[in-house]
Image 1 (spheres, rainbow, N blue to C red):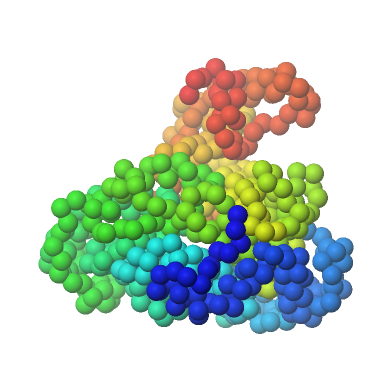
Image 2 (image 1 turned 90 degrees about the vertical axis):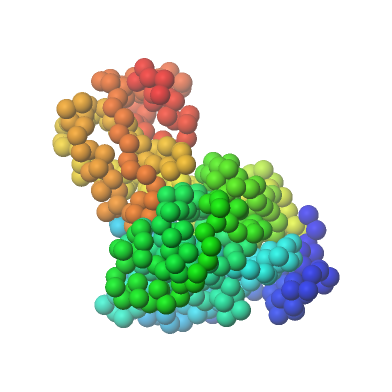
Length: 541
C-alpha cells in the first residue's frame, strides 16, 4: 500500500485541516519510511519522563537506553500486575510511574476487581489527541460531506467522580470528546452533560430528542451494538418523541425520570420540529456514514445495521484504541486494517511462541498480542489484545483487531475475564450443588451472556439468572454499564444433564488431550466450544 496517505491535493476542508496538522502528517509518513527511527525517538521521549520515577529507578531506566537494553531491563507485565502502582497513584502518589504529574484517572474494566484506574498525563493525552486528528483528517479526505451537518456521538461521562486524593476519574470516551478542539465540539448536536445523566433510559431519550432537532450527517460510537440500540429506542419512543418534537418540549416518556433541574436546563434548549414520517435513522437524517469498531465480534452487529438504519451506509473503524492509548489509525473504510501509529507510543507484538517483536518485524497473515509503552508510564504493558497483520505500508504493518487474548468474553466492550465469571458463579451457586458451569456469548441483536450449568436442577433454577447478572455487574463495571444501558441483555441459564462434564472430558481425551490435564471450560469463546459442550450434553442447542 502507498505511504502517501495525505497528499497535498484534495477538497477544500481537507486542505485546511491538512495544513493545520502538517507536522503530524510528516511524522506519519516518516514512520512508514523508517519505523525503527520513529520508535527510538518515541522511546527516548517516554524514558525522559519515566527514568526519574519510582518505576524508572527500580528498573534502572535511562533516557538514552536503546530499544534492546530497554527490553532487557523491563519484563512484560499484565494490567493486574500494574495495579499496585495504579493504586498508589489513585491514593495521591506522584512520581510513581512518570515524573510528569498525573492530572486525572480513567476508569475501565479491572482484571480482578470491579474497576481499574489508569493514569492520565498531559503528554499522554496529547499523543491520543494527535492520533484522533489523523483519523479525522482521513475521514475528511475521503468525504467532504463529513464537514457539513452534525456528528452524533455516544460516549460515557469523562468524570464519574473524585478520589480522596482529589484526582477525578471517568471514562476515556468522554475525556476524548471534551478534549476536542472547539471547531469539532460545536458540531456535536447533544450537549456533553447529557451523556452524564445517570438514568439510562432518560439519558438516551434526551440524547435522541436533541439529535432529532439537528441535521445529523454521521454517527460515531465505539460499538456497533450501540447503533442498534439507538435504532431500537427510536422505534420504542417514537410516539413520545414525535409529541415532544412538535411541542418543542422534553417532558414525555423517560424524560419524566430526569431530575427537575436537569429537565428545566434541557427544556430551554428544545426546538419545535415536525415529526419524521419514518423512524429509521437514515430516513430521519441525511446520513453520510457511520464510525464504530469493525473488528472482533463487531461483524455480527454490522450485518444487522442496513436494515435497522434504513440504508447501507459506509462504515469507518474508530481505530485500535483503548483507555490505555491509540495504537492504529484506519485510513479507509472496510476491514483492510488500520495503520500502526508509531508516533504516539512504543509498540511491541508477542507471537505465538512468546517472542516479542517490533512493528517492522511482523508478517502478513500472522496474529500477535499487543504490548505497549506509553508516556503515562505503562511500560511494557500487556494489553492482552490479539491483532492480525493484513498488509504493510512501507515498513509499518496494517492491523485488524481480532479478539481479547486470553479467556475474555467481549461482545460490546464488557471484557469479562475468567476470574470474574468464576467469582460470580461462586457468589451464586451453593457449595456442592453445581458440578460444572460454562459461560459464553449468545450473539443476537441484543446479545447476552449464557451460563450452561450442570447439577442445578429445575428446582434450583429460580432466581439464578438474575443473581448471576447482579454478580457479574458487581465484578465488572463495563458489564454493569452495558447492562444498564441496554447494550447487553440479561443472563440466560441453560441446564445441562448429569454427566455432561464427565463426557466432555472423555471426548477431549479421545481427541488427544492428556486425560489428567483436561479442564472444564469456564468460558466458551466461540461456537465450536459450545458445540463440543452441547454434544457432551446430548443436546443440539
